[in-house]
Length: 116
Image (cartoon, rainbow, N blue to C red):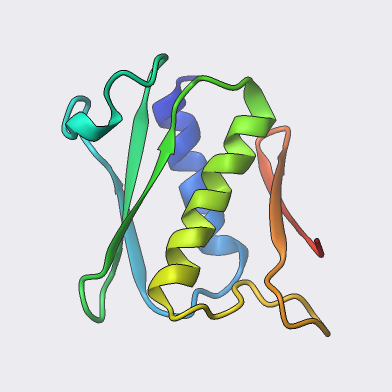
């Protein structure tokens, strides 16, 4: 599966996996749209996340430098970091009974949320 397709599938799972603290949209940037991501090696896929309320924007990158689930887990962590940072540090998704957010892991292409 291409990195672009993997990124889209993970973004769709991410949005469905737990209610987001605000309304967010996402889109893949066109190839070569941002020079910041060049030179990373592999097929670099950049996802832009935008909060509807105020236009706050953040980015996550799937670089192709690390194999499979490990890189996809890092990609999902980047999406989570955008939500947390742009939402004033809210613990998202909340970890039941704890003050910290749950941690994402990707196993066989599926996002799993766990207590760290």
